[in-house]
Length: 231
Image 1 (spheres, helix red, strand yellow):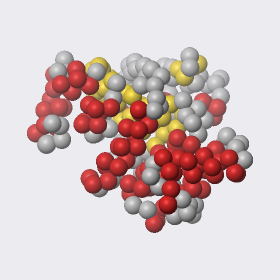
Image 2 (spheres, rainbow, N blue to C red):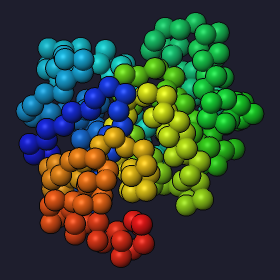
Image 3 (spheres, rainbow, N blue to C red):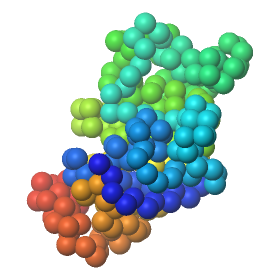
């Protein structure tokens, strides 16, 4: 349950959500993407409340993209087909245009040679890179990333985060839930610490991760330091 969330994600900025399991990070992302029923409040996209029951939710969702912890690729489709599907079916690109965009994005994530491979022939890191390419294929105004490295073996985390780092450098607007504190410190423009469905603290990575104001944030970070997960 979320309570009193007040969060702004500025265009071309990266905002990371950190906090313990069950703090509301994934729920917040799902609410933004209108995958959860919202009891009260607004979700403003370009100044329009897309959570208003009178709004066209499907049209709003076409302007956002979300990547989950699980890769959620269609197993009967190749990497190319997975990436090209939404541009072709949802955004009405021709098959040739959708395939060309998919090829470009697979090259961008380092998987040009795997365009014809099905998901069961790809590693976890490769599958997650395909999922990121698929999300990017719809050219979203906002990219939502939900703990996209949590299901990966440690040696595969870096290859996925390098793609996110590249997207951030290109100006993509990103709202990302993560346990990767080093990545948040390096890439995020803003870090938000959530606990109990609330934003307890929000600020620059240096402030929130290096000199937090709230005791709850300090305790969370101390736990990560003790576990060797925060340098």
